[in-house]
Image 1 (spheres, rainbow, N blue to C red):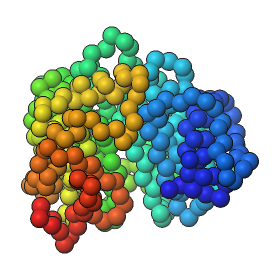
Image 2: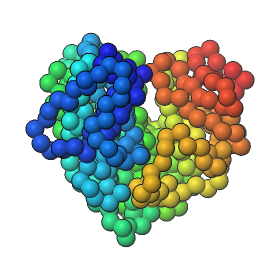
Image 3: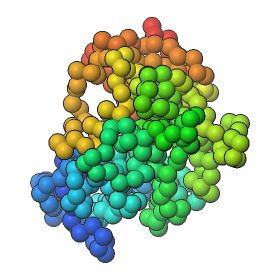
Length: 349
């Protein structure tokens, strides 16, 4: 999808992925590809779960790539979110977005086409709020996960507000066992919605999962909601789109008939968020993005609109969500592609 004049698709991704471990922290340089038809390997060796994401800068021949890199040679459970800018002739050496020496996971990148402030690129990810070691438990890992957010200016390539974490709060009992993960950025009308999945109690797990979010204005770095309701400490309360479910493995968001619609996968086999996060962080082999696991079929596919949930595909079938900027929700099931659009919002449709 990202092929340009001087790169094949494979060569661009290879070049970006393999240069991550090279010269991080030095003065940024440009690495040019010399040929148009062959792969260019800049460095051998790269973590399997680099999770590379590309977006185009608005009205430009440049693209931004973000990726996860174990660039300091530490244990496999340390990954840092890095960014690199490419154009038709060069690739810049990746630099960290938030250098806090904690584990980063699940990056998501959103690009606006026209932004008056030129704060065009919104990057979100799952970000641990402390360092991990080999003795950490699954529950401690899950309870440390927050949502990171950073905004890049498409002209200066700077981050005008710095990177920071969204953390709505601890659980009702005051414990630090709330897990935030799987952030998404969606354009809804004239607003930008940042959403995330959250487990309010990683120890009890079942029935504690929700999908929440807030509107975000990258021009002045402010959040809002439909009601702007706040808690007793004056902190803005997020909007809730899905409540009190079991483990949510994936979801996507779109505007359907003027309402926020969420398509999500919900576990039916008691999958624990602590186990999933432990595997994602501590597994030294990593996982490939298109690997099908036996547990993948133990997922209901549900549609939530105004907190009313409709089951579209019961568990027992392999389904996968399709990320898209189109004004609809899409998924694969048994070799077919389905869409949920304003004209089709029923299981039969």
